Amino acid sequence: MSDTSSQPGSSRFKRSISTDSFLREVTDEGLPKHYYGRTNRTPLNLAVCVGGVLGSLCIYGVLQERLMTIPYGGTTESPESAEMFTSSVFLVLINRLVTVCVSAVGIVLTGDSFKTMTPLNLYASIAFANLVTTVCQYEVLKYLSFAASTLAKCAKIIPVMIWGKIILHKSYNWRDYAMAALVTGGGFFFVFG
View 1 (tube, rainbow, N blue to C red):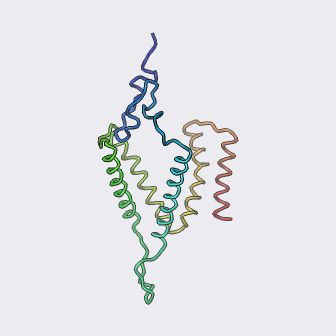
View 2: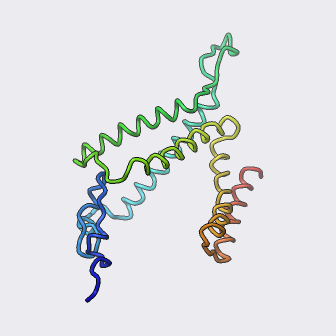
View 3: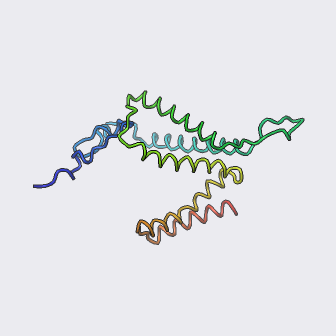
């Protein structure tokens, strides 16, 4: 007799994510029921979605840089009275409040529940790490342009690969190392070249 708990249709594979109704109803194969009935999975839809995400991130980056690098409040007669925006934590707070509001509207419009099965302490560690990195992202804009700071993130590929090899015992082939070196070198060439 075979163990049915490891089969795709078993309850072990069913996911319960309160804010994503797409994943709630699964077929016997473990796939969402609505997956095959969607008509918006076209190359044009993909291009629009990718363009929307990239466009939004570009606008976000330009606005971030402007906020942190352009003086405010001075007049042409007394430009020395202009001040720089200094509170990165306030910007992150406003960003998160807007995100919560938009998410709440999305949950209400889709008819989903605000309840979650995931313990809040698991969210807290990720949220804290995200908070710290976002504050640091705003702070670095006082010293580097948005493009330079974004490209500098390319340098994290090599330390992540080293960390994965030492701690997680992952293995990488020569192509992975070559690609990491090319991406990192290209980022440094663009910033310092």
